[in-house]
Image (cartoon, rainbow, N blue to C red; front, side):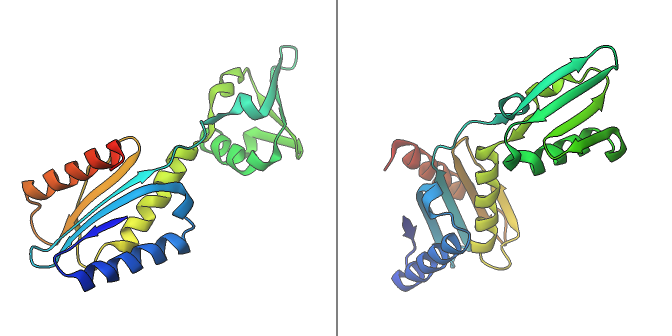
Length: 186
């Protein structure tokens, strides 16, 4: 972790703030590296965080068995991993009304019609979930009043430039340098 600031005490304070927020949100193990730039004179705050690799997305077919009964025109779904049941129901409720989803048991769901295309429905995306948690941390870390934010994130790096004035090109360049350094592992 590197917090760059002309004021050593200011850098130390921000390092403590960042560590505390990461501890509160249990993010320490999910982050490879972090670079921050703070300059109260300009006023700018740049933060770039490299996420660790996450597991792959979980599709519906990975955790459930699908069968289509042509006679009754019903798709039967047997849930093999109930840990994903809240995510499954959330995704189904986004697509169907609650009345259209019949759940006779904890592990069984019946839907009218041929719903075999649901096999490829993404039930859990660990990368996206981690990214969302990191954005939450960033918004807690940013100084109060820094409402002008430019997101320049890449695939595995979440990066933002924040200020209370107009964002300068030099700040974006600095953030892009941080992204390049984090990609190289510096």
